[in-house]
Length: 107
Image (cartoon, rainbow, N blue to C red; front, side, top):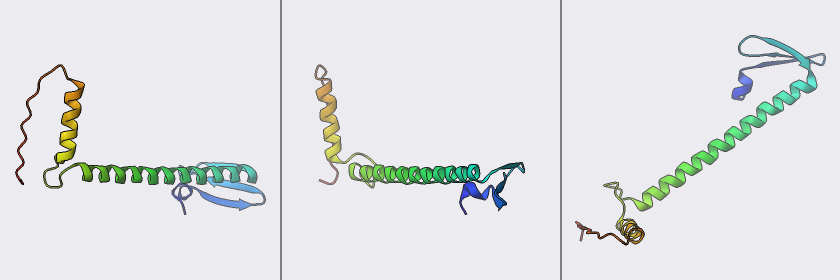
């Protein structure tokens, strides 16, 4: 049973649906209106599930990008990304002078 429907207990009898909400209120409506509500609840759940999947994919993609652009041990940018960012900063601010010191410990 889905989360939204777990809040409600559905009873169908003689063309009427008694819809008991989790707060204990009763609403009596005809069957067609009740079916529309059920389909709306199921559709909302489908969209929520799709949104969750899309969000998880985006997070996974961000993690992959981070792993490619950052050193696993230090968390700093990789050499290629660092040099690219330095060139970007210098090219955007060409009227200034810069000194860059880079120490490559590995060699």
